[in-house]
Length: 433
Image (cartoon, rainbow, N blue to C red; front, side, top):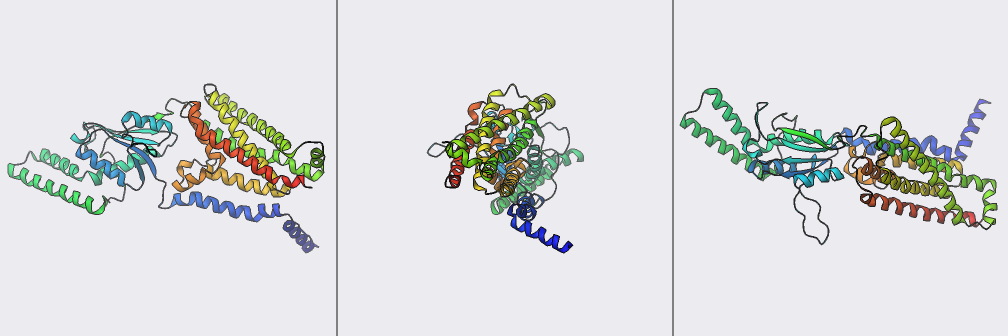
């Protein structure tokens, strides 16, 4: 009897494709997705950090340091804005334009080599008077500034070997009570040889240095300043509200759109279509309902964030309204598509769970995208989550005006229209019944 019950259970599971997918295919799929997204982070291929480099000194030491930063494989160094097709090359970044670029999210950090740096670039003694290198930081990415500061010390060791020798000999001369003219001549000859060897090594190896361990802390003076979010009370609340909100909106839209399948099973859909209601009108009505429901959910989430977690909502109402409307529209269209391509509720639940959790994983709802590899960050742009989170980040974190939201608004609106058109095409099967 027990064997019969077990056999009937497996037969029922085999007939229910939705339950079968949830039981076996979904866990394997999610394991594969998370292994692809997060697996490289534990190996040698750590995500590269984008940094804007400004050389205000224009000395030999600052140029060697800038070239060393460009050769560092863990960094993506940019010295000027990208030029548009057919337009002349834009000027290099200055301290002012680099700070504005960090505020707009062009890069998470900017490194400013100040004028006068080459006079005394390095020191082995804490507190020595020297020009500090400034790192302007967007604190929504808490890792970037620390990585840039650490790599800067490493690059200084390999790129400023001549300066290190100069400083070392200076300290030796002070400690020994001074050098004779012949000794000074010998030291200068040795320093010239060291500089020549370093230049030849850079020319032959492309500057690949032999420093592979920990950076030498304090070799170059560094000053880190947050230029985005430094005065915000709860800096990451808006990110979490958008990230979690969009993910659960997609589940809500999936459930609301699934009423089409319930109506088709019960025969109510046939009666609605026979009452001179077109399928386009019905889908538009369902989409509008899902959109209003999503707007209400997002509004409630952000109001809760403002009341409990001090989210600065009421000074960002125009941007919040625009992003909430377009995000809700796209999510509702996504729900209509899920309903139209599915044939049963079980099938829809399996497809929705797989797609929503996959999109949330690579789109930034579960894990910030700046921790992912560059390839996965680009893949994440195929999701609703990534564009919605980027839009809300512009509004609440970067305090940008509504006009700067046009890339996110355009992609979300265009994606929503495309999803609705595809959903309408798949829904033709109900008209032919």
